[in-house]
Image (tube, rainbow, N blue to C red; front, side, top):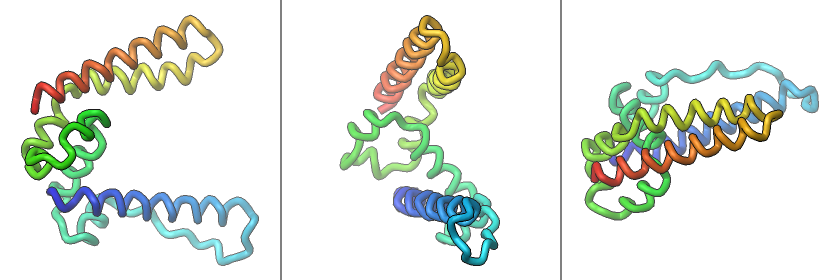
Length: 139
């Protein structure tokens, strides 16, 4: 798992480049052949880099769910080399992460009402802080 994270970032960047290219082709600015590649599945991406689907999914979970400040705290430590510990940290505070994501979605929907925007921003910030706190405690 420890070597999958750089591969994940490369795969995400590749998918992003392919999406940008497809959007460019679809925009009408290009007269190049407009055949787009089908999106890659988790299984396909995992096979490309020589991992099982499960290992790939765990690597994605680690990359996606650990709070940025927690990533900074563990970077370069022995904890960063332990996939099982990283999974434990990623799973800590999952309810708070979900609350923050829901509040952030609501924040976008409430853009017209300043009071709602402020409330959703406060909820999201509190949930993100609690998530980071729980993840730091899981260290």
